[in-house]
Length: 450
Ligand code: C2G
Image (cartoon, rainbow, N blue to C red; front, side, top):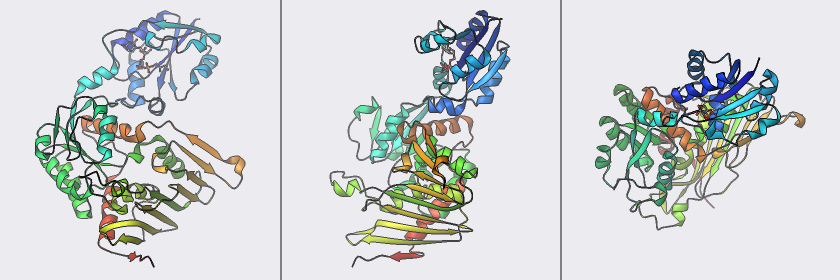
């Protein structure tokens, strides 16, 4: 019996895939098909896959061509599988020609002509092109514009900004650049807001009322009641409102949450978070439109994310200590937040006018997780134990700081009319509530330099 093995994502199964499977089957008597897992696809940069692993497996099974289906989960698994299943032939489409020649030492390698004129990414893009407007004066707006290019099914049609007065060369051609928010609204299906936090509530409310989906750089609003109102408005209009913290969409952060939550370090006792960046806009006055945001507005959401994801939002108490700049009222140069939970604590240090080691340390009753700086866009973390020989290191490829994964998740949510984001609404509301408490001076110790 001649065993043939082949692999693929098989997203939105089409006749190109089926023809490949038919010809693969014809090469022997028994066909094994490896279907890539979601995590493996993400790790190798395929972030636009629309269907779940089970949907893709079911589609391959329904062709009746596979005698056996396995899941491809890691780099190098092909060698293991060829040995494990005794495959005589490995085959794949000619778009991979040369890429798998190294398998020749284990079995025959045959590249079959790829079927022209069809691909999953084309189908995704034709599915429904989401016209996106970008609103914001910050470098973040340019980052979103650049990352959108990696996401199938969405296209930036307009930018609303006072600070982008020329075609950003890295974006290619964008038809419309304006400083009129309403003009953009009439041009698009969805908005990505990277504007000043003071403007988020008004802009989101306007966009939702105009029937537009919104992805907004956190915080959604600077008050709890406004945040709740916006989510209710979105639900009432059957629209997607995405609270955007790009860290939540990095694979390393997703995995460390799973490992911590699965008890790998025992009972979590403390979460220590540090985020600082010297506020570049305060240092370079040429950014006329960019209103500097204090530490809480700039770093609050990101720093609160691991605390709320790991310990929940039902803390017993929170206390702030902030140093405000005399010359810039309302601008906290740095802030410390201390939370007390049942059986755990959390300590956060954030600053736009201090520098510190931006690490994340999650301490537990059996070990701890260490994420080196800058933890909020890390591709690496360690789990450390008393017996250092048990320490584990984890590395996950990170492209684009998680932004393209986040946008892909937003587009999937819009297309399926189902929120598929990584940040629960209760966390968004709690972030707005913390910012409101701090701004209101609730439990805030005002620091004074001697
Ligand atoms: N294919 C094809 N013609 C197309 C599209 C795809 O012959 N128009 C082939 C691909 O060459 C591949 C298989 O169908 O052999 C599955 O394609 P994808 O689902 O796009 O998966 P891909 O990432 O190309 O899988 O490690 C090997 C990879 O997993 C191959």
